Length: 500
Image (cartoon, rainbow, N blue to C red):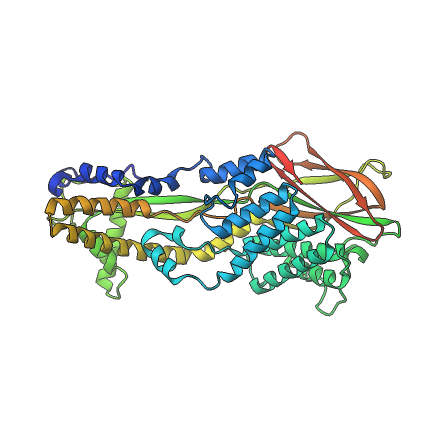
């Protein structure tokens, strides 16, 4: 939003030494400027070029290329922990469960270690931006580390370790609590409890499965039964709401399809660049004081600055009240993250199993998680802290720039002007929103279960999405179903392809 940022015509000519162009050239000549400008290279989606490339390779099924982009020798993710998360998820979809488990396990351990944060890096972020801080994975990231871990163990037939991941998932949900009133967060919690229950069932842990299904019903707002009622495992249950199916006959088994769709909402940068005069800086700095008149003056100046930057008021010929005579303006850039995309509408689905006596199987829904809504809600709680750090950083940068300028001016006034402007421009470039995130997660996760006769069956999934004239048909492959057992079939749909 820089179109309205124009210096006042007369005032700009009085900026001492006419050093704007030389100062800018001096900055661009610095070897670090190219590195500073690199984060501004974004794809049309708002993702970094690297993030967009990883997504494109994944959707196209070029898993080797995608994994190469997230290899141990690459630093494009912006953080070691985040790179491990990317590697683990990419390996999962590439059908490499051993590599996926190793990467996700290392990421989980590193996430736990980061509860004790680096003080020096936190202090540095007040000058350079939140991107210098170690990536602190939000709750959604931590849940999906165990979600993918459980799926990897199930894929290799290691039911016991899959149950361990389900327990860790339940522990993480317990730490987060189920008191949130946000529908997206409650839906995610309900779906993850139901997923954990499914994993416990597949591992033959009916007691733990019953507890997880009860927690899923509670998170989903099902209060039809009191806390004293006896929980019933899903594989043995009567028809009921979330987390339960119907009692299978002796020659039937259960298939749970975990359907993932789309890509989760991702962070994009929004920014505002302001040209502030010394009087305005002083007013803004004192606006937070307890003095009523100072606060009112600061609010008035803030409104004037915002309206001027947006081009809502004309630029006068000379400095207005409080601008100050004989002083240079200060270039202030404020950047903050917000979320984009990730909205995937609900769809009608149908499971088909030719050869079992019916063209259609009735699916019982266990849970639906709108992951994009959940990450937006989680971010809303972090927003005040992000804003506080941004404001403190703005003041700290101003002090640092003035110190550099005064030091250089002692030797040569013109040099001081050049160095001061270069420091100001550099500090503005350093102000970048922290848009890092695990952008490979699905936007929506849905769990459905069906009963089928024991044996080997080729299953098909039809998904009718809003706006599409015909359903999308997916071949889930041949599934071996054992009597009285649960088999989990994960499937992911994204624009242009499918991954198992």
